[in-house]
Length: 141
Image (cartoon, rainbow, N blue to C red; front, side, top):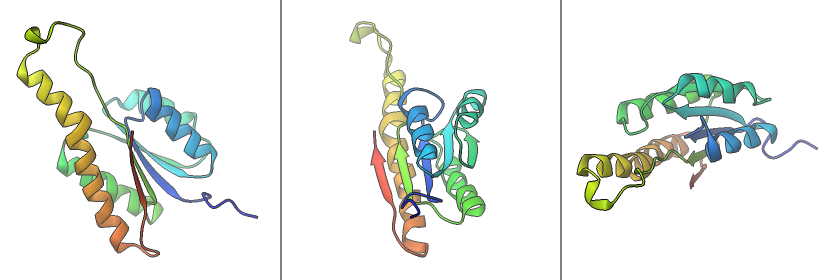
């Protein structure tokens, strides 16, 4: 009997290291075709090497709306659909006193950790609503 995950497609942001990389590899081992998204192309390629299923490496800035749309466009072009979005991209502030943290650094954290999840989820729902069969899942880690 075929697995219910076999051949499905997952997009994983923050896939170059940590939880994102582990999730991409785990989904791949479960039969998902995986789109790996993060800034660092070399690390994404390394993670893709550990995935036994077909992958698509898409390096870029997750806070960029045009980039997010391109990720979904390329995923649909290559795989025909998207079944899961795993929003995992994230950064943290340095361990310094709060009074030493510039506002622009804090804003960057909000953009990467929160705004990118909105941007990618919005793109996912555009795809989920227009594919056959309809639907998909979005997870924020």
